[in-house]
Image (cartoon, rainbow, N blue to C red):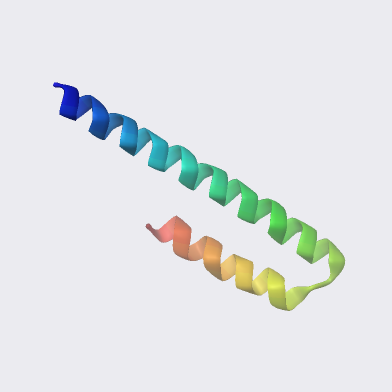
Length: 54
């Protein structure tokens, strides 16, 4: 039972961390796009698509 709770907590932590990372990447993409830095924006978009495919 305790092992199951630890797995559930670890999974919840992973999902929360992934969600925060996705939101952070979206924010950075928006900022770099506003600054006109297309290369960095494209790089972050690639990173975001990799993360979303997991």
